[in-house]
Length: 145
Ligand code: NI
Image (cartoon, rainbow, N blue to C red; front, side, top):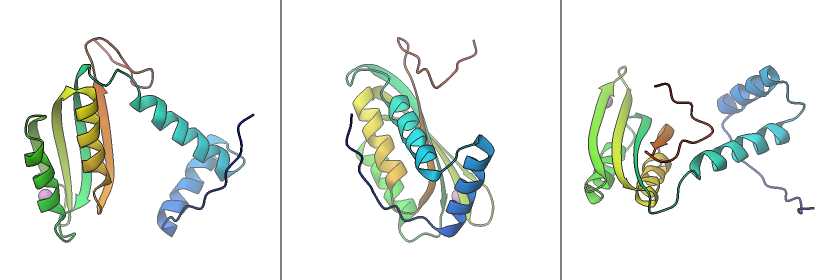
C-alpha cells in the first residue's frame, strides 16, 4: 500500500468556497478525496501520447491584462517558441479580463511544455490545454465527428 503524505495547500477564500460547493454537488464526504480525484483526472488527461508524437493543441488562458508584465511575458513565451505556435486569438472579455486561445502544433512534449509555461505564468487566472492527436484520443475528451 502506498504511503500517505500530507500536504498543505494555500487557496484564496473565494476559490475554496467554490471548491466546497463543487464537492458538495458531487457528493464527496471530504475535501481530500475530491482533491485526489481532481489530481488523478488531470494526470491521466495529460498523458495521452508518447513525447515525440505529433499533436495539435489549444491553450485557453483567462487573465487580467493589468497584471504587471503579464501580457509581455505571455507574448515573450510565444515568440521564444514560435516554431510551436500556429496562431493566437485574443478577445477582450470585459474592461479587465482577456481570453487568449493559443493554437499549438508539434511534438507532444514541446506542446505540453509550452502549454504548462503559459498556464503556470503568474497572474493567469485559469488555463487549460486540450490536446489532440490523429492517432490517440484521450479517454477524458470526447470527440464528435
Ligand atoms: Ni484583452
